[in-house]
Each structure stands twice: as structure tokens, then as C-alpha cells.
Length: 290
Image (cartoon, rainbow, N blue to C red; front, side):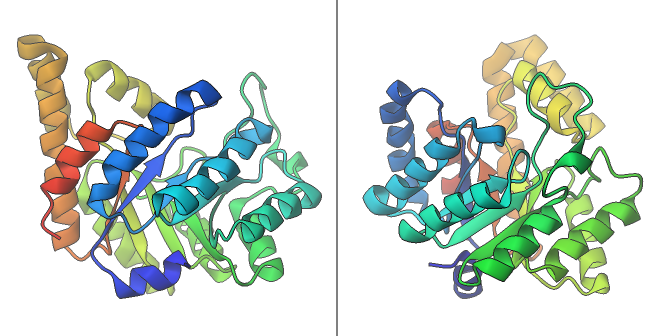
């Protein structure tokens, strides 16, 4: 089913994001996590996609198995990096054949190990171009895009970032999923600004629990999201006094309260970045009042 139709009929909701393991020997453990998280009755499960062909085949097969064998509605990520129209058509036609109705269209990151990667040399330079292509050729697919309550690290200004996201909506994106953030005021302000611009599509906030100080610093170095000073100080203090177990408990508590506040404030749902860790996500999801 099309996620854009499901959102209209079931809000608030929980949705999940999974990262397919590259090694097939890790798949049985991965699908055990998927089965454990079914108890949360997620509206959909998004499956990430490897740039330049890294895990594209994995994405398709895992999404197919999620829908066929585990009863979850998948959204497959699709990036424009290294993509030609021919490659895109091959992947999208495979999705249609597998009965997968949803795509999250992204520009994607530069290929690993490639310095000074030139996005302008790509057939599809921006996610908006990818969205326009999919919507024009595969009108039955429900296409979503990414959004950034904190401006994308490459955006010259907040306005420029909002303009780019608004362009995605004008080109056909039916919903938006945000990058992780830790201050809900940013989300609500962001959604209001998009509405004033005429981008009236559901904006699903992404929430990631910080489960250790080491992983928190690594994750934040990748996406550039800022941790509120008080929360960061609390994480550091918890680590000093109780180690990773204390940080884990604090991270779960913060993510749960953040998700509940978003739902209570009118967000259509919350998108939990699972990191393929069932226990943490179950603890958050089961404590939400939705």
C-alpha cells in the first residue's frame, strides 16, 4: 500500500528505519530484529540503500522479504549518486514487480574514498530531480523526500534549505522524513515555515536514541545534528558515573520523551532510527501513548 494513503488513515503512528547488513550471513539475525519490532505495529519500515551499487540488491531483496514474509510495508531508499536513468528504471521496475509501492528519494552521500566528489557531474544532481523523474514515469509509486530541521551542512542558509525542500514537494514528494534532531522546537518551527511556503505534506520527525557516548559523537559527526548543551552534559556525567549502561538509560529516556512531545504537539508520527537494535526501540515504542 502507498504510505501517503496510510498516513491519512492512521495518525499518530510509529515507523522504523533499518540498515541492511551487507553480509548475507548476518541476515538471519537482522530478520530476528525485524520480527521483534513487529509488535510495535509500525506504519512502515524504511530500508536504506547503498550509494553506487553497494547494497542496492540487498535493499530490494530485504524490502521484498519484509513485505512478503514479515507483513511490514516497506519504503526503499533510492539515491541519485551514480545513478543513470537506465539504472533507476531497472530498480524501480523491480520494485513495481515486487509489489513495493513506496520510495524515499535522496541525493545521497559521496562514494566512500572519493575526494572532492562533483555532484554536478551526475545525471541527477539533486533529490528534487530524482523525485521529478520517478513521479513522471512511475505515477503509482508514493515518493517521499528528506527534510532537515537543522539545515543541511551544505546549505548556504536556512532559507536556501527550505527552498530546496519546498522544491521536492513541488516536484511530487508526498511526504517528508526528517534527519535526526534533538530539540523539538526546531521541528515545529520548521514545519510551520514549510506550511507558510505552501508545502502542506506530512513531515515525519526522525528520532534516534543515543545509546553510548562514543556512538553519539560518531553519529553526530556524520550528520551534523546538534545536541542541546544540557543533554550533552547529562550524557557525559552519566558516562562518568555509570558508564555506557547509564548513558543507554538516559538516551532511551530522552528519546521517549522527545517522541511523545512530538506526537502530543501534532506530528503525524515518529520515525525511529533503529540501528537494527530491537531492545532499545521496543523500550521506546512500548512507552509511547499513541
